[in-house]
Image 1 (tube, rainbow, N blue to C red):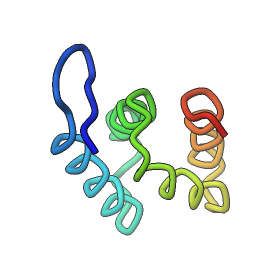
Image 2 (cartoon, rainbow, N blue to C red):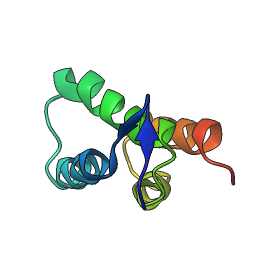
Image 3 (tube, helix red, strand yellow):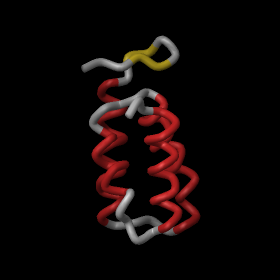
Image 4 (cartoon, rainbow, N blue to C red):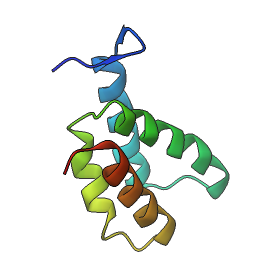
Length: 81
């Protein structure tokens, strides 16, 4: 499925971002990278990229409270549930 953001086709970019985030969850970066991680997640959520829902739903059970909070936010504000 193709996604358009600000008039640009974003399928490949969104897929690459999702792959990057899955790797990040396996091997978290230092906390000072979190703003970049949040921005990438927000891009996926804002585009309502459906494959990212799984990542955000998995995050609801994550031991990291900040990540849980952000996953709730991404799901609640950007996806029709």
